[in-house]
Length: 530
Image 1 (cartoon, rainbow, N blue to C red):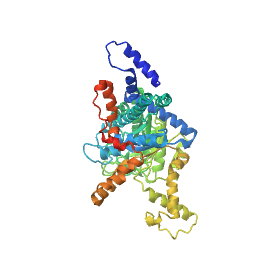
Image 2: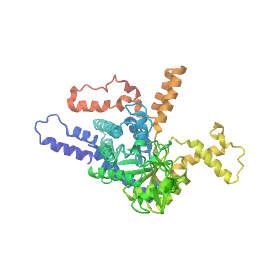
Image 3: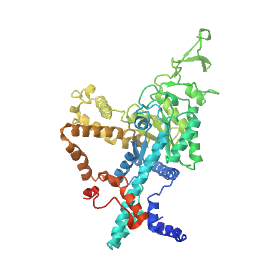
């Protein structure tokens, strides 16, 4: 609906009510356009369509990969999308990621927690709702400024400028983008996963990421002690999420199936199996077992039958069973194939390093069975990117027969290598990593899970060092406010960003000339008008 059509539509309704004195059709139209999404389900349906279109574009050309950055607060997500629109003019192929790790570390009522599903499970869908509240407010703020410019152009009699502004309003691009949201391992059984998934979707999430770890043993993907579940258990949770999407009318909602098998050497269960080669037998085939003589059995030993032989799986004092070493990649491939065959749309393979060869090797094997397999990949701050890529370059050059005597592989993090040929080559590979991995390793979506956790810590450290260390107020002015002004950061006018001008507009709609507005001549935000 165009701006003019919205005014006409509102006017038609107002015209049927003789006692609605002072209700202006244009003001109603403005408020409606500033609140385009009425419910979270509106958002989920809108953003699911975007992701589906982006996946099709990626299938046509891997250069069309997508990206996102992790968020732990609505304001952080809002500022990311405002910055993207400011610098690139469009939010196309740029999403937000909601990390369970950051919710645990920063948003739990228990205080900072490790990534072990100990935080309140409803805090994650609550953050989805918060993110979209801030994104919708960004729309309202930006459109409100356009409405004010339109009024000024009309008051000045500049009809051409007024038409340009109205066209910009009609073609306005929202800040609302897809959120890929982390539901961990489902926070319980399949029913618990279904109930929680509905909360996510009702808050606006069109894409849920679930992992194949045991819910009550869940660990961060980049830490030790991970325990996986049999495929049937994981598939039940994938189905639960699909049912949640379909029940709520978001039929094209997306599921990211994450496998932690590469770094997980343990399972809590021996899979149920009916016959050789079935899905349970495939899982059990990776168990580390010893053939046993029944007469030598000890008290409480557990046996399975494999190829007509009695085998004793290796069981730890924790009552967990051990996989054979070196089977991680094979288990990842099998996990991914079964997930895609049973309703998942995208894959996530949690790796211990960012290595295109390793990721691409697994994806090629998956695509032999599922040709359209696509990945979401964690460009994790848990990796030492500088060290990993310098090591990769060092090893590649050494294999080529280059003279590496000027480099010490054990000290490649040293700043002395920053301007070296090796350091610069490693940086180039990091710069091109996402593009190369999209092309060579089937990665549709690149994300950084915890970027603003680290940027907040770094910027706070720098400010504290300068402010308390002798620079005083200049530490803030020189490296924060002055940079905000010169770089055109909208938050320098923090009252406007917090909604003060939107409130003034509403006061004028509601009270007309009697409105007591905050944005007058004595508002200090006027100091930033230039």
